[in-house]
Image (cartoon, rainbow, N blue to C red):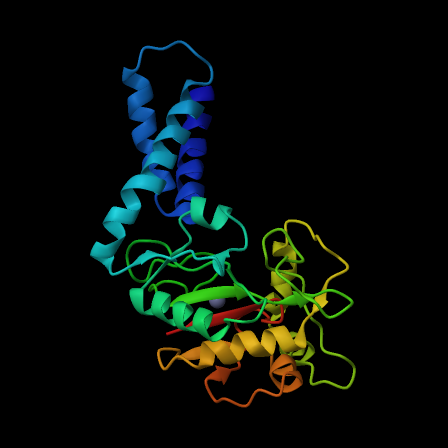
Amino acid sequence: MRKFLKIPSNILLFVFLTLLTQIGGIVYLVSMQINKRWKWNNKFKPTITFFTLYLGTTLLIIPLLAPIFGREKVKHTSKISPANYMTVLLNRNYIRPELNALLNQAEQELKGTDIEIHYLDANFPFINSCPLLPHLSHNDGKKIDLSLIYETENGEISNMQKSISGYGICEDPSPNEYNQITACLKKGYFQYNYSQYLTFGSINDDLIFSSKGNKKLIESLLMSPKLGKLFIEPHLKTRLNLTNDRIRFHGCQAVRHDNHIHVQL
Ligand SMILES: [Zn+2]
């Protein structure tokens, strides 16, 4: 009976690791084969094997293989870094070189300001059409989500986030702003509000949405002709007085974009 239960749990773990990290499922299968042959009697053997193999593959091997699929890691600089380093450890930080060039140009545009670019989910390293859940469109190396910019009560730009994941703390429409969220929910798109469940905990509650910081960040991204579309919730586009037609509404079938900025080539 135990053996019967063990097979499905192995399959479930394989599927979960694959959906989370793309390579985790394969690394898990390889680590199981190593454990079968490795005569070491230690209850931590499976965990040690998996994590050693996973980290070695993630940090050393995948960056060398990703260019075969036209992708590379997001290049970190003093002003470009992940909002949460788990994005890197989970292999969710791969993009096409043109997108690195776009981010690099935005960084140049932001020189002299305190604004930094903190990225969230991008794409997996391999295979077009393999979505990085829960983002169905992040499947071709052309997409990246960026954290919103916040400021202190005194109006000083902060480079901290308001949630551990960087997602989910929404800048709601004020009563006099157009409420796209209610409009989508009324049409039956119940998933539109789901991003609020992805915070993994809220932090820095005293920080507030920075209108000047987000406007400057978006304008710096728009300077690049490589930018195809940028998604942000309609009430924020209006609030920030942004009129560029590459800033689009993503549609009710997506999730709300007032907790992050979506950028694509
Ligand atoms: Zn996105």
